[in-house]
Length: 186
Ligand code: ADP
Image (cartoon, rainbow, N blue to C red; front, side):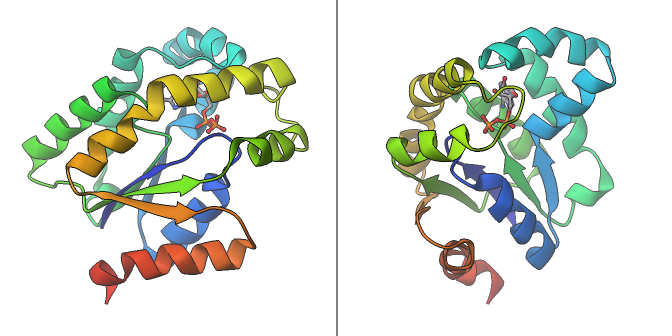
């Protein structure tokens, strides 16, 4: 299965992603994790990305697209993958379409984990990551609304989008995701 997982910061995507990859044996491609690792290792890409991440802004498309293109070549992606945090812009989505078309491995489904904005603020305020200060949180939500939300329409038009209600206990939300994936997993 090849899945794109979309949701605003604080939606609980990370928690659900961990379960998804464990249950379905998917490679987990989290661009946030990849960028944090690059930043901590002080690689060239990490140094380029650092200031954007600290400000809650998106890293430039060409940087992130190159990272994902490279990662998709790894052997563990052949059996299926969960893209988590990518694509985040229409340009990234178009680049992904091109990559997957070249490989002959189109997406199966795009999951949107939907959570109302008031609830996101409440959750993020209690989390305490370095880029979780109120101003940076606000900026990440703005980036989501302006740059990532248009993807929902993009994938809806392709008939790929499935919306998951992200409110409620973690187990219940995972059950909703599993139910949506039933047609692929039997
Ligand atoms: P969040 O908790 O906001 O969902 P992530 O852990 O996915 O954040 O990513 C953290 C930061 O890494 C983002 O705020 C952004 O600066 C950068 N980033 C991650 N993925 C992408 C992407 N696909 N395009 C551009 N920037 C990205």
